[in-house]
Length: 105
Image (cartoon, one colour):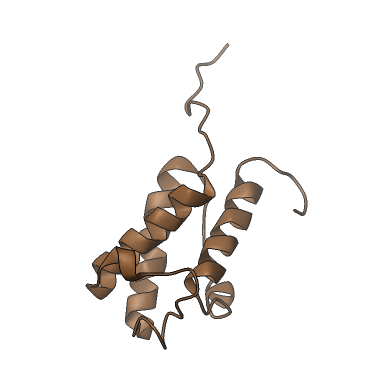
């Protein structure tokens, strides 16, 4: 039998995703991650411009792609995400789909 190339990876918990999102936004926007709330709007509350949002998406894909092969944020979907909570919910839904649920969630 061939050896597994990927050890069974545990999906991210919601708390881990929230921490990752806060840390990435803190680093990219040069703000205190603890000031990032789920209700924070990317543009209105955090002052994120389109380049910062692009950088944020790239960072999330890089971090999450290491543990969840195939994780990707669609450009069209990112335009619909207005708050940190929207992004966390989106990531959790995508991770559920990527981690083995064939079909719709």
